[in-house]
Length: 589
Image 1: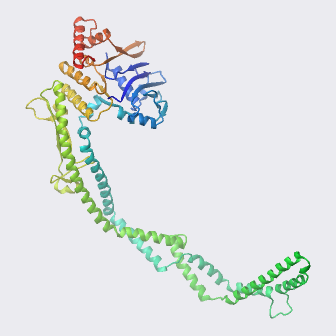
Image 2: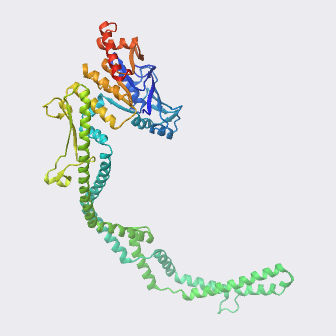
Image 3: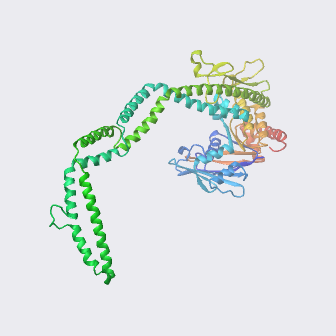
């Protein structure tokens, strides 16, 4: 069941196309015209609609912008609909509107279901909407890397599962190898770093600083350096508070406060306010007595000890040496020492780490060898089925004697470079992120021919048919709702062209197929036939898109066959083509 189809595309001011409406059928739509430019612009418009690169040169000269709008019928439960709703788009009765606006200055905007969205989102949806097969894609499939990708996708889980495990092990091996290389190539620098750390840690350990010791010693040095003045001040303060025994007539603060307390204490019972003041005066007397006692003790304990002062200054000098090198204070010095010890442990453990990494590297290479072998086996099995399916398709495309096969091989590495490879099948072979296989599609175009790479073993017409067969088989392994074929039938004609049309019509039974073609044999099989027509208005060229039905379709096929719309022979041939197509598709053409 087709879960999403492109129903309509509107194009305004895009190159030679101006305000054209392209209505697409749910089956097989053929797009034809006298020249390729207009038809190509239809393909370009669809590419823009699905997140393709925006080139301001596509905007018609004199126009401010180009707009492509599309109407897409989607199943509400399909991945496309769910992803669109996540982005805030709204579906209207199962219809999703997509638009892309390209300004002449190069700015591009995208809208999905009435909501502005990043252009990249259209590209995400395109993966589930349309498979494009065109001349560029055809050339891409000539590359072995693309052929391997096609084979892997065709194989499905049989390759995907071991490939995922292989990819994880490959990434881990790269990380291990990089770390191992860093440890071994930077051994000298790391040794120098370790020596510097050891020297610093030994220097700190020799001093044995204590947390906060620098602040405490600074305070002690300040006190010892001014011991005499401090003692004199404490003694004078004590005399002022508690009196001087050598001066019995002197007045001190304690005596005065005691007198004040006696004066109010005698009458406190007469007024609670005065009683409260009496209590406070009593408290002051007690406080003065305590302070006086502490001043006496401070003065007697204070000793101007030159030896102690010298020891303190010497210790402070040792601490200063540390703070000059390793931190602004002792707390930071101790923090540096802790970090340095941890780093030194890492550096001293390099030998053990190198041994661990070497063992892990060897284990990962062995694991990769086993996974690479599993990948090769799975690819070989899928290659047989894929080649058989493509060969069957070629038989229907008028190449009954052609045979397609895959070459799956590994490149051995020299014995001196064995450490750069992995062991597969008892041999040291080169490997990469996708395994150790070199995959190449081969073609033997006739019996007795030696299979050769398709880029070398096929003529232009044969290559188009081989690519079409490959793409159709590949499309069957990764189905999407819509397939766009852009002149992949180039170089094909006659009976082979009829078979191309027949095969595309068969594919259209389960998917929406849009084909840009110059072959009447292909267009005749379409359920809907669209023609790009150009008109010239002075220096401006415009193109429109017209649906061909009935007599108009006969005339267009006659033009494509003989260049003569009114030729009786061409009309007869066109009618015969349509009749053949209707018979092949059960009357649907």
